[in-house]
Length: 365
Ligand SMILES: *Cc1c(COP(=O)(O)O)cnc(C)c1O
Image (cartoon, rainbow, N blue to C red; front, top):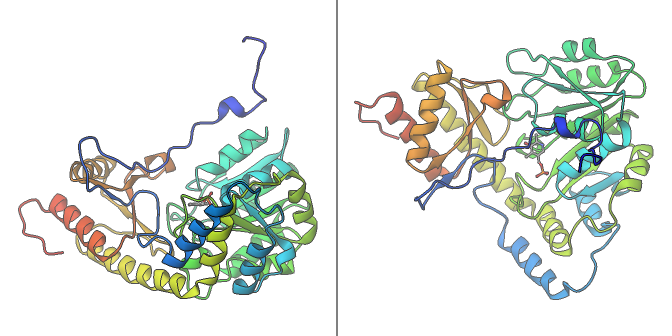
């Protein structure tokens, strides 16, 4: 055993912790800890997956052509410059694998997605954490942290777990200010929740160093199937295609994703309902003295007066079978990230938090 050593960086990885999904001895648990879509996929999408099950003895498509075409049609993207992954996580990992290695640096911000340092370490590159400003990506700080070794910069827009966004002008300034040879990765896991936002499409199409990624795990309600994609300039796609596994997406996943992508009415319903419940929940919690930054995603990050209060509220919710995400691990010890559920779920969690804040008062929610 002693002679068998992992590559440099790998043992520096702290295992990713997903959102909790059960409480011992309790059924009827309300899971608002993983930013999942409370409505799930449409019936048409589920039917497409079941139909695909009749061909499970066949290998899936390796070029993902029909899915890329569907994505291109719906979002106005060039299908040739789309690469599909087993979740957007696979695409994000491939980017680090292709462009960052030993001696290189991978940039991301202090409250950034917990997978970014893992992508860096898994490929022997150095993770570089950059400060944010008021829980928002700070372009000046990122540019100041750049060196000749910087090869990849990951930004989620909207960001997780903060829900905050930076605008197109700031994104362009970041793309243009990076050192030559570094790519800007716009992780758009929550982009579809923002009305009128192109997720970085225009930036990708007007630069040679910008990649955007999107996922079917959030607004499309298909986290269990593992589908995502990237959109990038052709030379970058040509690099990524060389390291992509030929059968990285299963046939049922491809069939479901294609149907989900074209089912724009369902997507629109999810986006509208999310915005409505999110804004109601944020206002109701603010009324109790629990502020949150304006969220552009399908969750809100509420801030308590202290770490102890956030943890106590988390325990209070868990005891009632309501799971939210304590984000101490993201450098926000006083915060709880709450996924926007359907109307009944939002009312249930707000009511429970109201009881926590004012145990003696009758709270209507
Ligand atoms: C949920 C999420 C993803 C999606 O990952 P998948 O592998 O596509 O399920 C990517 N980035 C961020 C910031 C996320 O929150």
